[in-house]
Amino acid sequence: MPLPRRIQHCRVCGAATAYRIPPDDNRERAICSACGEIHYENPLNVVGTVPVWGDQVLLCRRNIEPRFGFWTLPAGFMELGESTAEGAIRETAEEAGANIELLELFTMLNVVRVGQVHFYYRARMCDLTLAPGPETIEARLFREDEIPWEELAFRTVRQTLEHYFADRRAGNFALHVGDVS
Amino acid sequence: MPLPRRIQHCRVCGAATAYRIPPDDNRERAICSACGEIHYENPLNVVGTVPVWGDQVLLCRRNIEPRFGFWTLPAGFMELGESTAEGAIRETAEEAGANIELLELFTMLNVVRVGQVHFYYRARMCDLTLAPGPETIEARLFREDEIPWEELAFRTVRQTLEHYFADRRAGNFALHVGDVS
Image (cartoon, rainbow over all chains, first blue to last red; front, side, top):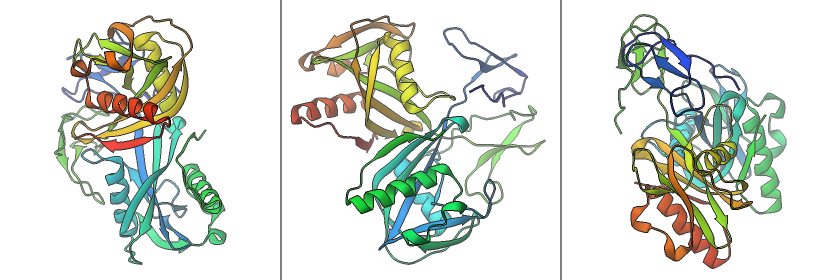
């Protein structure tokens, strides 16, 4: 994947940057033409949950782009100052207003094309409180035969739900590590 | 954890940024005073391996700061254009010059204080080829009773090695997810 070359100016001094390979490195970085600061660009983590109430799973309909109006598991970008688990709980609260007990890490899916790694934890809803935040049109529970498979926002959400229902039928939840092309 | 406030200038136009909370957000970001670009700062992934040859584990002595001269498992920052697994293989090649067969993800350790998540995969060395790169003083194999516990570079390396030898004694390798304070 070519670097997106998104960094045109130095974050330290504001001068123009140019993409070239620094000494003792092997790939191009945005290097400041004035102060020499090297800017690294790295993958981002997306953290979320599979919140479950009885035989139902909680999905959120997106009120933001990309994939406005499509259904997703509650998830979002991991922030500084939190762990993957803390981020998953925070996103579930922000997007759905749900109170959950976090269970095990369930899927870890690389989405190399967009430079992301997605992490979904299984979670048990503590009650039926739902209070969707500004990024969510509505949050509701779905039984397996009600899942809007054709209206899911992301492939990692589809894969995570497929693994979830397959593991539930098998009576054994395991971690699933994989790549989404 | 307070944001490090490392971004003083806009990557798009070079104008000065100021940290404030954007609309529909709940934490401070570096926002450009001229073009309005919002700069997000997120945790980084470190990917590596536990390369094994018989009953021995491969460690590398660091030729770079931080922790110059201390021993580490081969690992480094995940790059754009690769998966966690591909990054772990690449770092093992770059730092040790080792040919490995990658096995399962073994530890996933959050290091919140520094905004990192560390991933170590178990790996089988295919042969005894070692060709340390510029970031490594030397690479060598250690039996459990030879591990330089007091000269390990990072707590995630220590925890991963502790889990590895404990699981090997128990005869069962499992994924270990945790936090390092």
